[in-house]
Length: 165
Image (cartoon, rainbow, N blue to C red):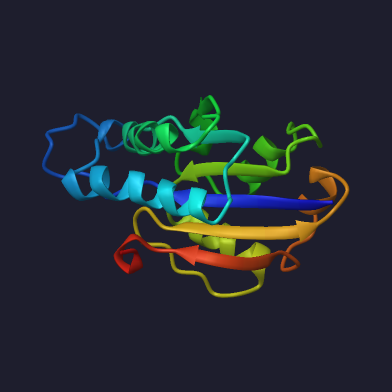
C-alpha cells in the first residue's frame, strides 16, 4: 500500500503584529493569501489529507484553518505542542499513532525541522520557504514500517506558492 505524507510549512508570519511570543505570532497578509492557494493545489493534485496534525503555534493553526475549507471532507486537525519547532523525531512520534487505514497524512510545522525531515526522508536537499508543501510517498504496509525508512521516500512534488498561478 502506498503511504503519502504532506509536510507543510506554515504561511508567512507577521513579525510586526506585536505578538508577545514567537508561539503567538500570526500570519501576515501574504500568509493568509497563500494558504488557501496551496490547499487548492493539493486538491487539484488529489492529495487531500485524511488526517492532519499541526504545531499549536498561532501561525500553523491559522494556516490550516485557511486551508481546511478546500478539503472535502475537511479533516479535523490535532494541534500538538510537540510539533512546535519539532523535527523528524517529533514527526515519527506523531505518525506512530496513525491507523494503517490512513493513506494520506499532513503535518503542519516549522523550519528548520520540516526542511530537515523532508531532506532525510527523501534523500534529497529540500528547501522549504513559507507555505511550501512537500509531497512524499512510499510503498509500505504500515506507517511504522514507512517511518523507519530514511531516504527511501519519493519526493513526488514540491509545491511553492510563488510558482502557482
